[in-house]
Length: 225
Image 1: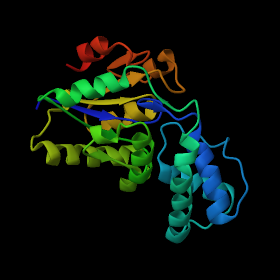
Image 2: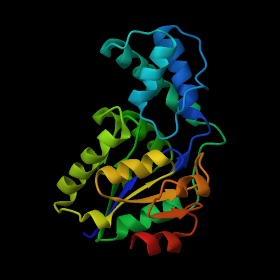
Image 3: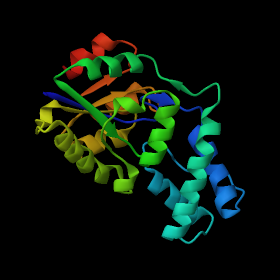
Image 4: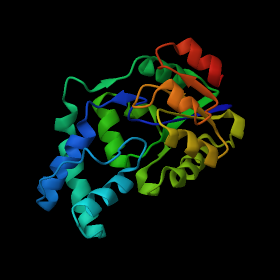
């Protein structure tokens, strides 16, 4: 194997139509009895653990493992229903690229996401994409995206039984946080403007490449090899 692709989920592989925030609000109500809005919390590029900490701070909930587990259970339970909305979709070109990557002997692909593993599986499973990713780094590994990157890389090495050269590792995501967490492991960053950041905003953070979206598979493979 030569090339490693580490994928972000929300805003890169899929658009959830606000399903994540809605499920977080439902979980807050069902698990902790709090009616509240989360619109003022920046979800983009953050980890579920980071988001929960901000939610607990906002509503003065003690940040105990018991409260965290109860809240996450409520959130995960709510996700399937919130994902069943007309705006939740796989983004253009994604399925084609993932299928082509899976068919190549010189490419491995996994996840590098701020989602907890259970949330990632629920979201991608809803769209039939989960089976493309045999390994990954998740919010279970840390509260900050930069803490997750080394875990994703380690699991890639363990899965593929090879050490990927840094110049052959690509982190693909839609936020500046994705670009930054690529740098932590010496990887290259491919930014896609399919989330909440424009091409100009992403370019300001100096990724190795930027695409407006993944609809042009040939353009993607020309970049990553």
